[in-house]
Length: 463
Ligand SMILES: Cc1ncc(COP(=O)(O)O)c(C=O)c1O
Image (cartoon, rainbow, N blue to C red; front, top):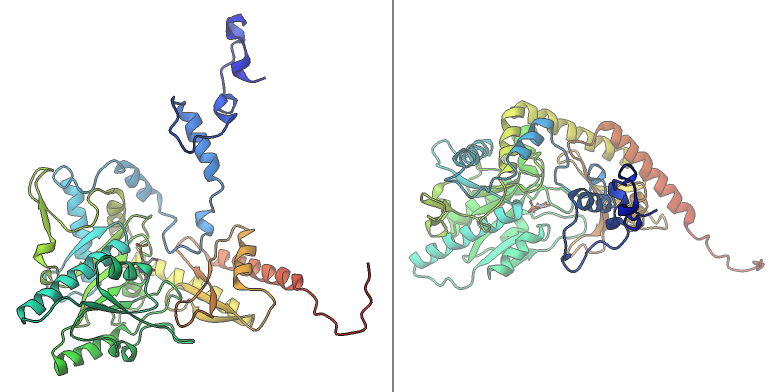
């Protein structure tokens, strides 16, 4: 019996039905989707309706498509909930939170080997996309001032980057009216090299983009060689072209496990670096960082001062309001884990990725574009002609809950279709073994489904 059909008045007091959540009318009809409902509903019904529908989302722990953290420890979760109601921009009201952002920027500048004498500056952002937009805008403004000072035209800025860049780089070029010089990939060559870069730069280049861990394959551009080539160019032609390093994923890995690899402010032309706190910074979504090598690399006319929150507050962000919780969670990770803690986690992540990469390689069924040995990203192509595509393999794995994307590479490597797995903190050695077994099972099922080759003659038609 449905509760609202019960005539409560006729019932004795003791017989009254106290409706349980799933006994209420909210579970009988459609959930409001297009128009806000006229009346309110009880909170338990609203919660349950949304909660139940969200069960159909993928399981974040099995999501190897995302680079973004899907797990944090209890201390962090507690701090996040305690600070979920603070708007980060209210510096005057939440001065300690603002202070914490500065501390993280300081730590990152040192982690990225900013020169001792340099006064580095930086900012927390919603993610690496905002950080990259802000960095490139700063380089555009600096280039313009330089050209103005030389009495030269400044109406044709360009930016040089490999086709391996994340979409945000292309967005920047279009949104902020900068000519995009996208250096194409080639089959077997999926990163930006110094040689390729040199063919595209000129006096109007505001910046060269170099990636530490590309979104497509997890490989790194030739950052050191690009720097050396630009240093040489500065001497021969007088063009002082800065590099912005997109360390969205690699920026929190390289300092801990490849401390001798030079990709950061140790390189003269690297003037700014972004890193995603919410990737290997091990914080939930909503956290990116931008660090400029020197204060002078961030033009003053890009900084705005507002007084409507009390005090005189400088701001250099695209968005005004955002949450504070992830900034605090980032600081928690940094002091809780320390360098040794981050190092151990990164070693485990890379170790587990390499293990999975080695298992896949051993089958001789895959060509590995990235075996997880440097950055914990495994990118594979199918070897030979197994009779199915990586897209079908990806879909088959989804039946088991694994979320592993398959896609084609950008120009000029569009013919290459790959499947990519990002190994994160909460993906153990054991899980790597389970995933490997599931990949092989899916491979076997798809191969058996392959239609039998047609016989040329003599076949009997059996009905
Ligand atoms: C190399 C690279 N740069 C930038 C981004 C954009 O980062 P976010 O998602 O933090 O905005 C990504 C995201 O995957 C990335 O892999």
